[in-house]
Length: 456
Image (cartoon, rainbow, N blue to C red; front, side, top):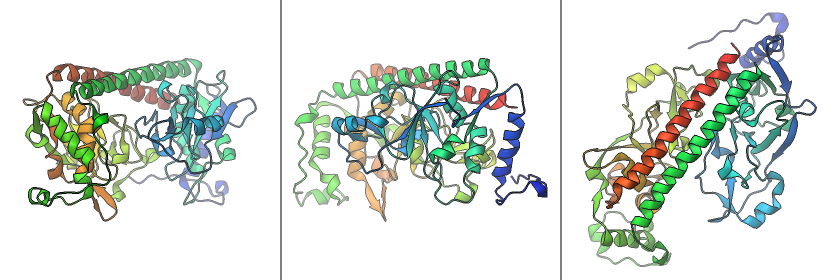
């Protein structure tokens, strides 16, 4: 939809960037209203902590202190399972950028900068890269929850976009960040937003604990000492193996993956994923149909790529949105309890669709539709989310198409799914977790609208 904005000649600046004038109009309006409190982040006494991560590459290890890249920070949430860690010794050296409870994380570099989230209990003591700032302001002015919500609002987005008129590689420098104005309609609204987001944080945390407990119970119920399965990277493959398998890649025959499947099959009845579910791929809608966060309307639908699968769910506020009419024309029929599995790029990410999710899935995501008369969706999700079942088999079958890792649907249908005796108990834990996450998402959605509508 084409939007027009009329600006008198005498109000034109050197730049002809539309959002610059949209921002000026909004700021002038809000600043003149007596019912709206305002301050700039750079005002005296506002910022208590403002720092980014170390400006150097990091050496990642298998376990250690959690390390948050800017790509992990989404609107209102931080991805907790990206698997980047630095040594605890290195983390102690980087004490300046160590995360504290309820720090606000704000992305400052890249095309889609200007995204905020609050540090929860899980992330405390972790660290960040140089493309994220750790921000803490005077709580007498605004809570971390309100600040993060405001920085994710349309009003903040107007300001951020106006700072970059034509830049191909924008950087939100400290002076630019400090120029951002924060508006608060009333203390009642401020306190309601704070209370709601604290409640949403707890619900999301409790939901993830339930899902992780389901995964742990599943893994323990396999009754296999995975530490005793060798991970020899030097191995030979008998000639006769190629007569029964049509995959000729080193990873398919890697002893860790092969022997893990052998041990699981020894102890448990297994069925192929193709026996338990149906499959549908996502769609490419064309980049010309993408809408950025500020350009979207409330009826537009999130476009979900593999990078938008976080914490076992889809990102409700991703980089791109799609017009509702395109959503209806494509008609993917995404439904509650569908399982998402990334098959391009970062392979093996899992998520589950909950009742309020509405989205268009990109082509890099496979929708796994459980046959509910054969398997419980929550049990199947848990199985696919356990590394020794889902990730190992995905890595075995992944090929490199040009430069991009890819996993074919027919290979995924061959996955072996162990059917455990305590499947109902596992399903129940996962179900409880997703119910809590659904409540959290609904609370964040309604709270965002409270803030947006408060400036009408």
